[in-house]
Image 1 (cartoon, rainbow, N blue to C red):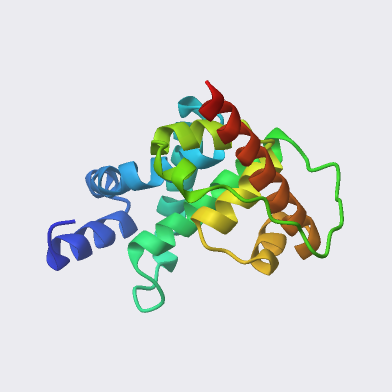
Image 2 (cartoon, one colour):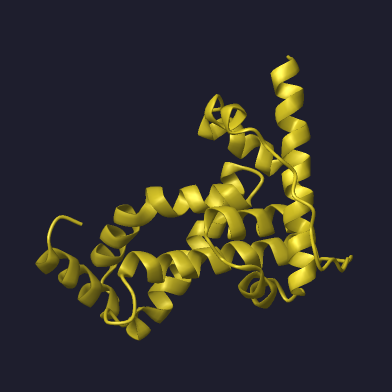
Length: 181
């Protein structure tokens, strides 16, 4: 968004159901939001589908947006992340609820991560099981804590910790395999 007046005009247009304003909002936030969707989905097609579902929710609920409570980016991001989680739930119900109060940490050397491109890391994260990938993304990329993740995914804190530990261990193995090539 270029300036505050334009920003406000687009929000007000969306609240009136103006298609051009909706298109402007979609274009303004597309790149940032599709990047989030790509972290939660297995391919670009699903990412765009989830993104479009998220924006449909944004447009349906734009009347509820309160600038005093959160920035528009944060409000849209929250809706998009929840759309990603809805997609994961639809793809696969989490059948196993393994309890773990203390998850052991797998160590991924910082130099291994610094040598990787973001796209390469994204490909590795996409290889994780959906629930494990979701917990990893929510914890590492979105900054949620285990209690919040548990509430979002309807799992316990311990299960969230277990998925994070599993994700880290799996990513460590995948990174080591790539380094050996």
